[in-house]
Image (cartoon, rainbow, N blue to C red; front, side):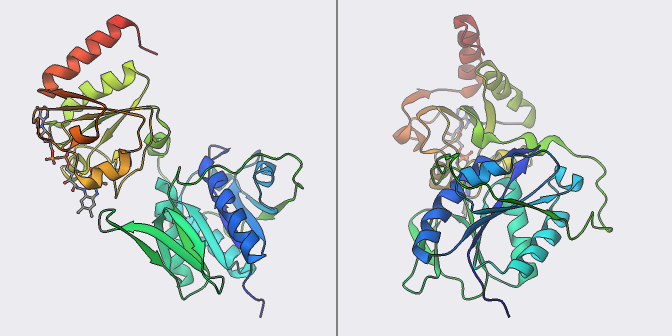
Length: 328
Ligand code: FAD
């Protein structure tokens, strides 16, 4: 039987654009492959027309481009079946997937089908003396870093977006793109009726985030934050309190169990600053907090703090910024 070998990065694409997390995984993958003296390859699933060699320029030795119009939709079941079949055939030792919304949903399905372990949301990856992967991720609300090893193969991990630097682009790298056919077409048991816009909703890319917490009393009041976000060309995020209350989708949740964001400006409106929220936004360049409680912990990390009722302060912000002409 063929020995397990090499590192495989599952590259993510959205509407034919390769997600930057793939370049970050290749950067870390290159470092690991060098130490392991092994190969670093990529699997890209997507429709016609993706510039797959870009993954070579970023460090992948071989790019397996599985083409199919069904991959135009980020639909877990078809992706999972094909990735599992590919892994069973190629037997990589390590499989890395971006911890994006789609990656987080896809990776456990692959791991379960392969009956292997998976460490989700890693923030670092290392190797032990025997060349096995040490998967590092925060645990107990970021109070310690767990070092996890998987005893099964392949060793699988998802890695948070913006955790590693993107691999540098080198057009001198050898281009090696192998086009392969999908093993399976649409899963006959799955019918896609309608695609809702959730895939377009990626707050991790936003330069300005206006986030609301339990200080927002009802769903309709989020419109106020949306207006401020729109004025500044940003997106709305939320604390878990609003997701749990059914007022917002988990795709917009910021924090430990949500998205990790690093915008230029982060507004925390009616958010107390619990460690699990702060874990996802503390690296924002400028933090502006609005809270009626002067002792709220969010003020300890805020660059600018407004003590007051957000229902009075936010409309003032909107008025002021519109007047100043900061609007995009
Ligand atoms: P609260 O803590 O209730 O704070 C509301 C704030 O609004 C208060 O400070 C209050 O003074 C202020 N306020 C109220 N009314 C007004 C007003 N009119 N004007 C101005 N200010 C006002 N949380 C996350 O956010 N993201 C995560 O990813 C996450 N993951 C978690 C994972 C685990 C394992 C656990 C245990 C918890 C997690 N949490 C997460 C929950 C977290 O612990 C907090 O419960 C949550 O962040 C609190 O949200 P909040 O700040 O909106 O609400």
